Image 1 (cartoon, helix red, strand yellow):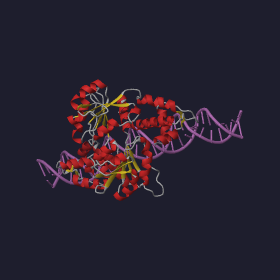
Image 2 (cartoon, protein in one colour):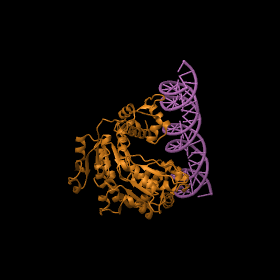
Image 3 (cartoon, chains in turn green, purple, red, orange):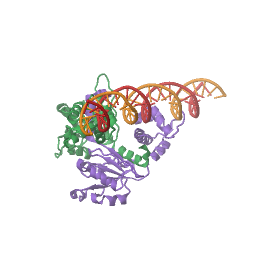
Image 4 (tube, rainbow over the protein chains, first blue to last red):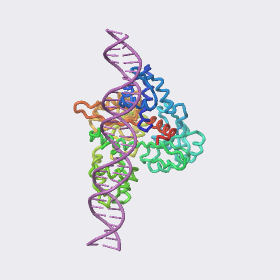
Amino acid sequence: MNSEMLVRITRYFRALNRLRAIGLEKVFAHNLADAAGVSAAIVRKDFSQLDIRGQKRGGYEINELIDRIGAILGKGDAQNVIIVGCGRIGKALMHYSGFEPDGIRIVAGFDTDPLIYSEASYPVPVYPISRLEEIVGALDVQVAIITVPEASAADVAERIRAAGIHGILNFSPITLKPHPAENGEKTDVIHNINIALELEQIFYELKFPAIR
Amino acid sequence: MNSEMLVRITRYFRALNRLRAIGLEKVFAHNLADAAGVSAAIVRKDFSQLDIRGQKRGGYEINELIDRIGAILGKGDAQNVIIVGCGRIGKALMHYSGFEPDGIRIVAGFDTDPLIYSEASYPVPVYPISRLEEIVGALDVQVAIITVPEASAADVAERIRAAGIHGILNFSPITLKPHPAENGEKTDVIHNINIALELEQIFYELKFPAIR
DNA sequence: TCCTTAATGTGAATTGCGTAACAATAACCA
DNA sequence: TGGTTATTGTTACGCAATTCACATTAAGGA
């Protein structure tokens, strides 16, 4: 299982849930391929590698697929997340309703600014960052979303790691890198989302469509 | 030029600006590699493909690199963006200050809700979506950011395309796909950012570190 | 029952990308 | 001036992932 394939199977999972919602029970490789935006050959190959078998001429059973892929993706486990940096973007994510259907729960926010963490109008509790270790220890948190300004991103990431969180979704423009894993330590999983970079790439690709 | 390489050269560009800001004039492949988080070999290879030459033993001139890469990335051209969907995330992006140093300007917002577009507290004008074509025509907009709910994302994307915008950064959980290019029509460039998907992947990778 | 058709499943070919290795070259130093 | 060293530029290699092609299998129809 590599990371490209992981992206694909989470896509399959979503597409399958939508297909089931509209009443379908079976799906063919090429349907799912369309829905997930990949080729039919790779759908078959992915399923083959996951030991998921279909019926010749009958396609795949959606329920079975959802069960199998759901198990692979760890649905059912607690997926608790904190948000560090409760500025505009952090707040917006706290209110975002799209996490719930995936079993992801935002359980707390953190900020350095007393004006922010004293305010009471959040959907989840917001604490001063000095209480990070304490709260994280109490809440079974595995992943943190970083929405702090560029200047404090690296420090915040360090602190989060020190608190025992090894999953980071980073929205700051600094590209965070995983620490090299040492003597049995858990290795970091870091995804960086750089919005300005995405826009730049779009502009470039518009300018030179040859990139395909 | 493939998309991985494009990511890298935008990284080079940023790193180079930082290096110049602290007074450097030359840079070696391995320095830039460290700063951009890649290998030295690939830096040389990228530059070789872009016909950027360094001086044996002297490295590359930062000013020349910035000029060349800036030209490739289209710096200097207008990079005007609109935001469609002025809910919490859309608003947060309007206020985001990280676009300016890259020459990206958010020039307008759009929403269907009169309560939203009548409000006056935005850093840029917000219009009813019915005026999309008109405003887009007047402002030289090439890229739209979609921050609308899932249910309206596909319609909004269609409308944006119809208005002649072919670059889309989509934050809705629907994966938007480019229209197949027809008879000389400009092909769409669409980047989808699915935050729930990113979190799911992080959880998975934490669970099975074997993915590397 | 047998033939056609539609789909899966998989080995082989291909492509693309990063790494490694090294030849070429210019600066520096004695 | 000549040798040494540091760095570039490029070629060859290897891996990994996708696509291709087709054998395999089951359904459906005459």
